[in-house]
Image 1 (cartoon, rainbow, N blue to C red):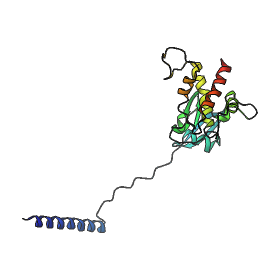
Image 2 (cartoon, helix red, strand yellow):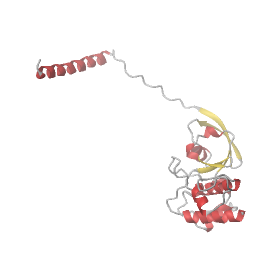
Image 3 (cartoon, rainbow, N blue to C red):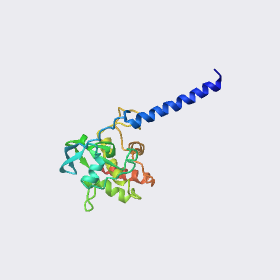
Length: 211
């Protein structure tokens, strides 16, 4: 059998297989891949304490804490930036710890105490960190500011509690609110306006008041 014959047989084989497949499909004998059942939306009851107020909600299990705050409780001070936990714009304080609210589901926080920018202070009675940001022009365009302020408040609390960081040469020593220490701890909050030095000045002022 020459190479031309083998090629011809191969071509015929392909055509025959295709024709057979078409007949099977047209006759209804073929089995299509099973279509997955539509995902069911599951709602769960959830209780949160946000800025000192208790909220009883019933949410889709896939709802993030960020969307819960913004869309269900209408606390839009917390901003949605990258929605991937990379910019820190959505930082809130949960049980005293700062977290990126876009990376956590609301149902993971049953009974938790959450503080957003609205819970730190009011226009008539600003939190010291809010006042310092204004004084040192630490906000610029302002979109990242709520997350920056929540993180800054929590950073100083971390230092006060002696929580170590990568900036420390000796992890057994008590951390201080130095420029290097605060830069390291605030590195998860990205400001494309470049207000970092002003933010650090605001934090240093508040840290000095506490000292």
